[in-house]
View 1: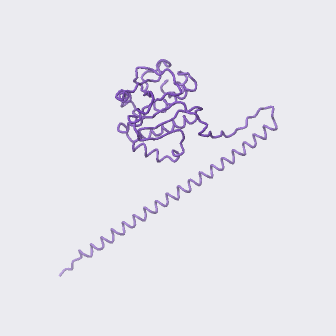
View 2: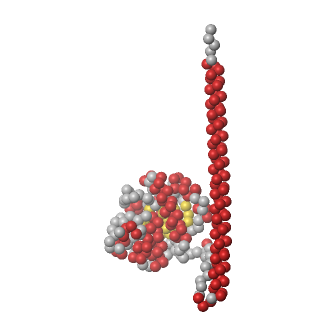
View 3: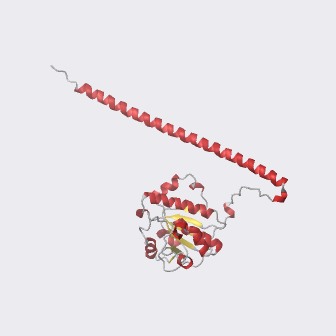
Length: 271
């Protein structure tokens, strides 16, 4: 009479499965700890390099100061660190809304690119003597993920992130203008109280005219940057959000459209 080994084999299978699960869990934990250790060591190395650079810079400045004292006739310029402006001393003129309520038209990589454009907008605006007040509106879940992931966004100044859409905000705004490439009228100048809306859409020309259609549906006036009037070789250019913003900032400072556009439009468009 043959003995049944089915029950005992099932027992071994259960033990093997449990062992494999524990082994995988242990390996996963080891990998996690290894990654944490690597990141901590990386941060430590970065801090060391930063401290070394500061020390070297201090030494260089010390040498330059000494040379300047020994040779006053040479008018040697002593480098200094620009003092961070107190937010109370910064006077904003005008408002710019970046309308990001286009997530359903973009792929994940495009939303990531949009956040990079917002980074550049923030950085450029922050350097201006009289920056715009920046409002990033219509922030969806995908864009919010990149905003929350960035370590410095909590410290960003003169910028507001909101999930409220431009549709919800327009009733609180005084004479806002939507900037679109398809508008029939060009922007002439910029006043201190102007409110501009720029479409935060990375579309690679796949959704041309969407911002214009949206503005019309909301009964908002539209204007375009005066590209054709100032750069005759260029027509129907769809500029990136950050390039539109940079043009506004430069014009506000120089009151020169041609110069502002040429400095903001990427060189590839001039070829």
